[in-house]
Amino acid sequence: MKKTTLWAKSLVVFVGGIFMATAQSTEKTPVKVQKRTLMNKFEPDYVKPVDERIALKEKRIATQRKTKKILDTLDISDRKRRRLMRELKRSPFSERIHKTILAETKFEDEIDENPKK
Image (cartoon, one colour):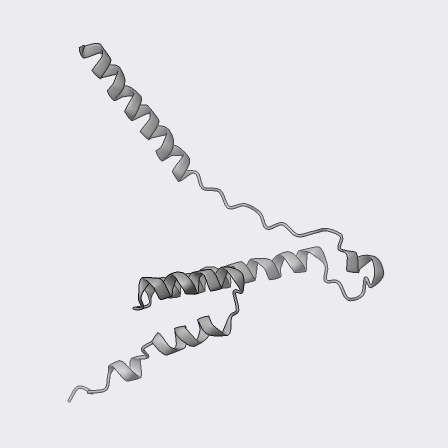
């Protein structure tokens, strides 16, 4: 009886340790873009080089993460937050998201209406 409980407890600790180890080893996946595009075949002057497209994609991803952090900190209902998160995934530069962020942002001038005397 004692051996089975000891084995069960050690199994639970082992499995929990595996999950903790894999959760901590989050690696940043490199950004992928197509090396050759269809447009490059016909109009190579209009297509940006691969390294420039990678930089643009990384910048867009950073902007999306920043917007997501801002949406998480806003004082809005959960339903509206979920809807805006879906909108952020569909179109990262949506006008609706920017309007909500501007409407809900409280600037320091508005907070300090009563100056200290």
